[in-house]
Image 1: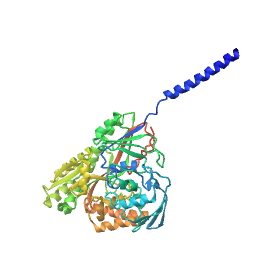
Image 2 (image 1 turned 90 degrees about the horizontal axis):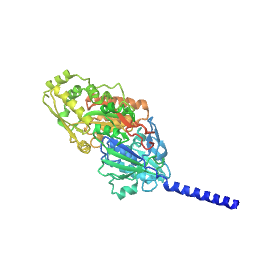
Image 3 (image 1 turned 180 degrees about the vertical axis):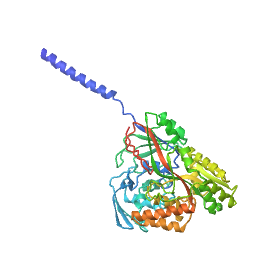
Image 4 (image 1 turned 45 degrees about the vertical axis):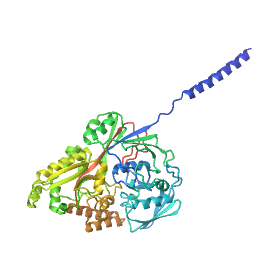
Length: 505
């Protein structure tokens, strides 16, 4: 009887354990979806990496697409879609692609996709300047691509690391009739799920990403153009990371124990650009007076709380090839006013265009006041970002207030698109500035692989731009990133293309 009772207890115990396990399984909580919310300071025009040259477009592109190579935090070229590469001679470059890389539609990356993408780059406004030296591209087999240059080009790998030279899926581009404005199939860490109006863009983690899927499930990108609103969104916990926070808002955020501030230099120079299609700017005396009147230090102190550096050159101070020996005109209000009076320029009407970034509008207002003091009348035209880009591409402006990010970290990516005669127009040289003598030094800098020789050519080019007052460099920017303190593995890049795919929280 005791034996039977013991067996009964054992059976009861077994039944009891099984029931507990079932309850555990039945009541197990579903893993909570992890969503990273990012606040951008502008609305992307679209996700086509070859179409749009603005930084915000590049930030979006890098989430969806990959390039053949990438630039690490030390400015070195490292593998991305290409696992290795070799210069067979100064004008022949062979890439060996990684095998098994998947596009978001399930297709495997092949050399034919690279050939298709490079040929497409040569015919699109944002990317064409990046691949201008490429004269030919061919697939040697499914995983090997040969690129031929028209002449030696020292920065080709840096250009091919930029989001504007992202590799596309040939099949999907053709299916979409070449319209990737709000839809794109890439190999990147995130798949585009919903564009909507572009005010809030939703992406999800690509589980088959060749470098490993992101640790979180979704990425939500919100457009919050007003600086203070972006800061308030952080404090209200509506976003986890805010890009390009205004210095004045940093003062309010720095005492918040739940937030972390990262403020570092980036490859961005803010400047005044003249439209040389307008007859009035052929008068160097006018350009000289404008350059001497602008209070750069006053702008930095008043608008950026000192978080910017006065520019002596159009080339960013953190770009390869920058020279601190380059000089421009010092501020001299008396001399500027005298130039205006002696050249009969008093009362000259000018117009500057800028986008609806509050800080830029305030900078324009200071410049307006500066020019009024010397007898020049400046009208400020503030337009939406998309309109701003369109007006620049179409030369629909007199003076432009804006910045240029040398996203490769190399002087060539600043000097060639902005000041070489062949780049006049939508490619970057919005001012249509043409100087054959300057072109020679820019070309010489990209033709040699000797770093010292490149720097020498670029220094001469920078000084020529300053001497001719082709523009008025104002200041070198800092990027102020603010995020929740639980954000880990955020990787800052001086190119503005910060790495967020590795974030954990």
